[in-house]
Every structure is written in C-alpha cells, then in structure tokens.
Image 1 (cartoon, rainbow, N blue to C red):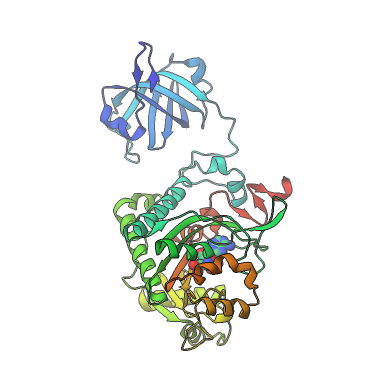
Image 2 (image 1 turned 135 degrees about the horizontal axis):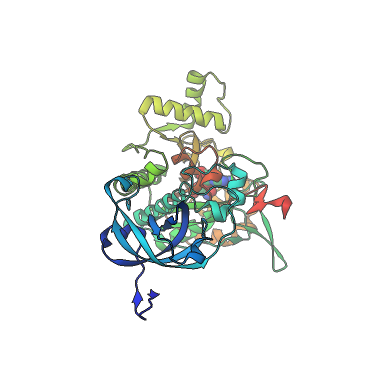
Length: 453
Ligand code: AMO
C-alpha cells in the first residue's frame, strides 16, 4: 500500500495487471530495467516479479530524481495508464499495448553503476563473472527463469509424492556416520567432537520407512569433491524418496517414471512460455522408460561403440553418453534406466541380486548423457545388513543407531536420490551444472573464488 497526497492508500498494481487498468491511476513498484531519453521526455522500463511495463516521464515530473535514475534503482511510481498509439505498440511484451504516464516517482533504493549490461536479452559474461556477481546476475531475464523452473520441479515432486501417500520429513545435515562411503566426506568440528556433513539422507529415509512407510525429503547434501568437473558440486539439492512394501527395485523406478511423466504434463500445460524464454524444449517421458541390465549395457557399448568394457565395475561418463545416444536412436527416449550395477560399486545398504550376487537390485537413471538418479531395493534383513557392513569393511558400531530400525522390523523397501541441479542443467542443455545452481559450492568457490577471500 502506498500513501497518496490525499492521505488515502493505494494498492500496488503489478506490471502484468496494468493493461486492465486503462484510464486509471495506478501505483507500481519495481526496478528500473532500462532508461531511454527522447528529448525532454524519459522512458523507463520498470520490472517487477510479473514482468516489464513502460513508463513515460513527462518533463517536469520529479526532474531532480529522474535525471539520476539508472538500471536497478528501485522505484515506486504513481501514474495514469494510457493506451499506446497503434505504431507505438510493442507486441513482444504482454504490457505492450499500454504505457504509464508518471505523475510521481519515488526512489526506494539506489544502485551503483552496473559492471555489465543487464538490459540485453542475453547476459554477455563468462561463467566466473556470472557466479561472482550472482546476487545481480540472478535477476537477469535469461537467468531468473532457470530458477523459476527449478522451483516448479521441486513443487511437482512434492505434490506428486504427496498425492500417492508419501510424507515429507526433514533430514539432519550433521551426521556421525558416513552413508555413501568413499573419500568425499566433509568433516566438521561439532562442539569439540568429530562429525560429518551428510552426503545424503540415506540412512534417515530408511529409518523413516518404519514410521510412515512412504517418505520423501528435499534438502542440501554435501560431497567433498576434490576435482573440478562440469557435473559435480560440493553441495547440491538431493530429492530423495523411500518406500516400504515394494516387491523389488522396479516399483521404485515406476514411481519415478510416473512422476517424470506428471512433471512433463505440468510443464507442457503451464510452463511452455518459460521453456520458450529459455530456448529449450520439454522432453517426452515414455510411458515406460527403457531399461537395460548393466551387463547388456556393456555389451551394447562394445558392439555399437567398439570399446571393450565387459567386466568393468562401473560405467564411465563416456559410456553413459553412448548409452543415451543408443536410447535416443533405438527408443526415441532421452531417459534410460541401467539396472543391476555390480555389488562392488554399490553401497552396503543395496540389496544384492539373489540370482547373481555379484550384481545388485539397483539402478541409475541416465538423461541426455548423464546420470541424474541412483536408487535401489535395500537390504531389510538385520542379519544380512550386518553381514553387508562387514563385507564392505565398515564397523557395525558406527551404524548402531541405524541398525536398530532393522532390529525392530522394517518391510521390504527401496528408494532413490535425484540431483536437482544436474537435472535442471540437462533439461536446459547447459554444458555445466553451475549454470543451474543457486550459489554453487565447488572446489574453488564458496560464493566468491576461495583464494580471494
Ligand atoms: P548418488 O551418490 O548416486 O546416490 O547421488 C544421487 C544423485 O545425486 C546427484 N549427485 C550430484 N549432483 C551434483 N554434484 C555432485 N557431487 C553429485 N553427486 C551426486 C546425481 C546422482 O544421480 N543415497 C543414494 C541414492 C539412493 O540410493 O537413494 C545417493 O546419494 O544426480
């Protein structure tokens, strides 16, 4: 609300609403997006969360303020909404049929001179500059929609899982144990004790199956990656679910398949224009995403792409790219499941395949050349789980708390973890996950480059 000269309050009108207010006086608030001087008249493009509207400032209106106005200044403007003449209309913006004739302009906040042009449709800066100035660059019209889309993905995951009986929970980020193993644990000094940052909510989501049967959690996880790649972050958003009373890992795959289909419908119905603005297309999600046993995937790599890899315990990034190429060619699908990864490469909580214990009831989902999800059926049997810990060289004592969930009975269960930033980046065809990451943490950066701090 804005106090007028007559002492009455006027409600703020959003830019997008102004075409419905022709002939009325409105109060708008936002950022100066661009300023154009036309003789004595000044044109301002004012941006708020709904879009841009053009303001005409006749000479004499707050001239002492107007003379200084620059991009990113925050202003409140009272003005009269006028239809534009036929030839002054701008078909490229939803408010292009009108303009606001300013009667009063107040400056709410000033901005220093910008380090680069924020008005151009494309932001012409390299990745480092983009990240160094993220508080500013995130506002750019080509950057903001990336994170609007990310919010839609999270909302869709939450709504879909809620609709099929899942309960959301918050998982702790400080942990004593180390669920995923490996060298990427980040240690913290926890009030004089040694603790770690959670690499995933894995152990907690399994314990929560004993409480709600079907659970999910969306939160930050931490990986002490010591290398710099285009798809690894040291902190990322993991979207996890876990469900009880399954038959096997394919039930988990099915739920993800159905969610992705529901996401693509939501995107098509409500967010096509967001994709248009981002110059990207919404992928088709097959009714059943094609799936290959790990062994068959290796055979395809050998046969189709000529690289010997049978017997290797994991797929390399190049293998994943080839398999996706194969999936596109064979099934016209950007998505591909690879199942039954070798036991040696999967964590202790993964259920081995009874028929071939060197493999596990696990899967990855590959999308456009890169893994976006890992999941599996888990070991629910207390004794088998203890044996698995031993087999993997882990100490039972370190998992005592988690093990008590199994000691006291858990159903057959499974789940998955999905990397939000990676998926967003691939959806938008970015070559680096950092373009789809809010405030990325990597080996060289926490907000600003580390050596400069
Ligand atoms: P995993 O470690 O494979 O599995 O991770 C699951 C998904 O998280 C994303 N991801 C990453 N994204 C950005 N930077 C990273 N450093 C990074 N590491 C992983 C990927 C990956 O597919 N607990 C299991 C999941 C489960 O079985 O439920 C886990 O965390 O998209």
